[in-house]
Image (cartoon, rainbow, N blue to C red):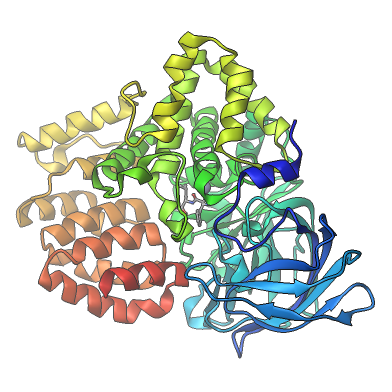
Length: 598
Ligand code: BES
Ligand code: ZN
């Protein structure tokens, strides 16, 4: 077994300035105040460090931070520091003079209002409309915009934090959390398990807590908590199912935080406290596979972590596979099959659309680029497809044993593609050339596209949708179609089957029969709007405008703006909407859409 440092040397992280093989942070005590008026976080980050090579310098990552002073040791002796040259995407190295015997470093700093990880919401942008709201999004390399930190997924720290916030608000973190407000506005947090920096998370707002099970619960604004508690009532069963699949949950509690609609992602697996978009509050529990996904990250990602962003598929591919296993446990194979098919469709679109074919390999090369470039269906769905191929080759039972051992062996460690493949060879393939041939590591991991021998998922419930769709195509009026008991997945499949060109009459007929334009399901809405835009179905204009100005989830925004931009008149519409909507989007989303609209 190699030591952590040897692994560190093997997998140099091109997205961090830190040099963890020389001097590395082990524990963080964060002591900060949150100032909503100035949109600034300020305070001190104290690190316990290990100086492995008796070096006279430790390097942290910083982006747009004002570093005021740096001190060494318990005596807080001031030391020299320097911010190095700014590099695109990465920010700057923070180089701090230390001594061979230095045990701790204290950095006094403040953020700037532009900090990309932070979104400061006005009361108007929240559900309750009375109080401001703040949340962070650190993945992939934005932790360095709110904390000076060794911002590499190959480095793990434990942490404690003291956070001062306005008295009317509650603070929560990716840590042990309070369940109600106190009257001081000062909150203390502990994360006792070592985590990578991208899992540092904080949110501050008018939050209340509602328990679901003994170890599970939900934080949300008072206006949202009831709907959320209904929607996610099964989170406890999900946790039980996950534990029965891949071993004990290692983070004690599992809670959810429901954010305002500007949250740029569907979910973010911050340990102990998944951050989730309110766009999954569909009122019928139809979009909860997203919770299964974020919960699964408690094993794949948070427990066993991709060592660099080139190994991102280790986080997301495993998590998609695990997510669907949880859904299968809870709702049966027919349900999970629908998710597999939808995911496979997404993968095929990505493979067709992606210009840079090298980015369709599982192992990526993101040097010199934003690690966000790796955030594609390749990591998620090709990663999952690879694991399905292994499962098919060795059988589910053996594969599950293997995965259990994998999570146990690498628990609380960062790993990388090579390490995983080595483990796969020694634990599963064991020199069997027939199995090796079928698993085809080279084809999946290092080659672009999809190897010929892949599982093509199919779904019995979708077969029925396809029949129904054909019968509509054949002339059956929409109102006469059998769509009883369809979940949003079936509807999504139905909408995706519709051809690019549709007449006004067809769109009106479908809309009248099924109420797509006014659907309360964000996935259905987003898929329907694509057709509406493409075919200039103006009856959906208002709803589209409303959706784009309230929802900040990038996965929905990007395809919709992209579709609008295809025609000159659509472009005008996009610009008008974006002018209104932009203040509601997180930097993660504006970064992408600015680029598209410029
Ligand atoms: N960890 C990701 C989100 C992420 C990845 C943020 C990379 C920043 C950089 C999260 O687990 C995720 O995958 N979210 C998905 C939902 C999921 C069901 C596919 C999302 O936000 O859409
Ligand atoms: Zn994920």
